[in-house]
Length: 84
Image 1: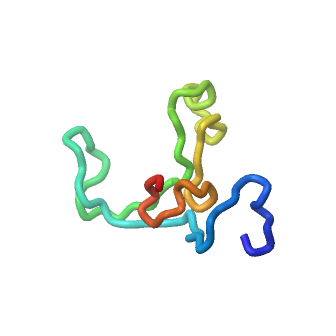
Image 2: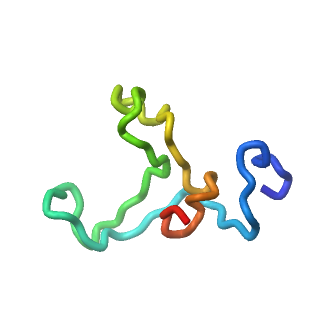
């Protein structure tokens, strides 16, 4: 960031919150969720994928054509992980 290595792919406004490794606790779940419960500790896979492109539909979500990566993509650099 400081040395400009990401300048070709993004132009984040400074100050910029770095980071993509995070964990937390489940606050609530929907009625169809069975694999976690409120209070469980969790980690998040940081790659956000669309689930619709050909790689996603083939089970290759790491090659998603529309993926974003919180901590690298400026629109998702907030602590909440939600777009600005």
